[in-house]
Image 1: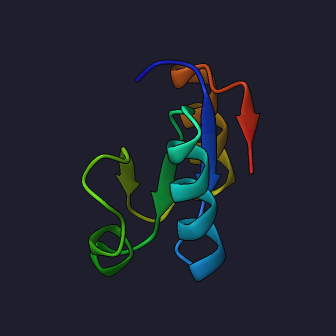
Image 2: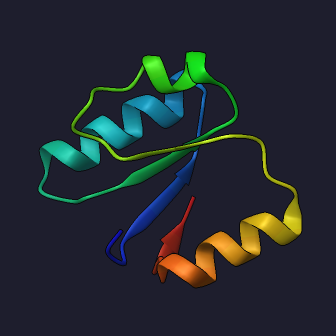
Length: 70
């Protein structure tokens, strides 16, 4: 994944924000806890699926070089 925006989502607002950003040329990645949350997002938006604790979130951000986390 390229550096960009990471949204910890799964809610309606997270999905809507990801779609809004994608429509404006951004490339957000959404982290969701469940497969159901993943199914709600369009296939064009990259999704990380699975629950993460604080250490896993920190590692994910560092490994992928996200510049903005929401």
